[in-house]
Amino acid sequence: HVAFASAATNFVAGDTNGNIDIFIKNLDSGAIERVNTNSAGAQGSGGDCGTPSLSGDARYVGFVCAQTGLVADSGGAVAGFFVKDRQTGAIRRVSVNASGVPANAASSATAQALADNGIAVFASAANNLVDGDTQRYADVFAQRYAAAGAIATTTAIVSHAPEPTAAGQSYVVAVGVTRSSGSQAIGGSVAIS
Image 1 (tube, rainbow, N blue to C red):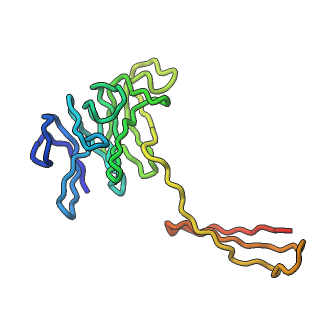
Image 2: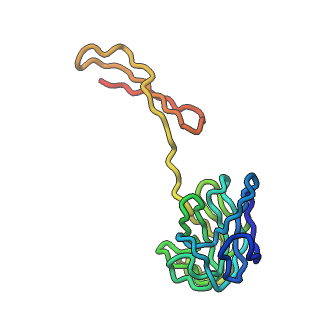
């Protein structure tokens, strides 16, 4: 996949907003989709978008955009940093404070803004993203854009010794836990009496 910004109106049907939009192209199939749309698929309006970035699996696309109508918050036409989940269609403004209030100054980002651990990095001169920010220079912020996935594991009793035959007998149980991602197994034992 490759993500790019363009003012072209012939990549997808219904692109009539007259602004620079963010697209992603599947290099295997050639399919192109516009990602700066709201969760219902409607286009934004009133400003341009740029600086797209992709998560490693291309599920998430981050971008800076000054369009309205992408999310329900009242960020207005101040350029914010957004992340679109291509799997669910959900979109969220990431350049917000802990209460969800959008940045009160423009945000910017690089093409490497999305980490695969669910953290986005962006810059903003906003003074309302963290308490005590009074200098009005651009700061760099890290914000979660996706829920950190639970580590899928398989747990199994590997052995127990001696064979429990009587109530109150002490024995040791060895438990093995393996991450489904194929990383190294985690082992341990528990004494039960």
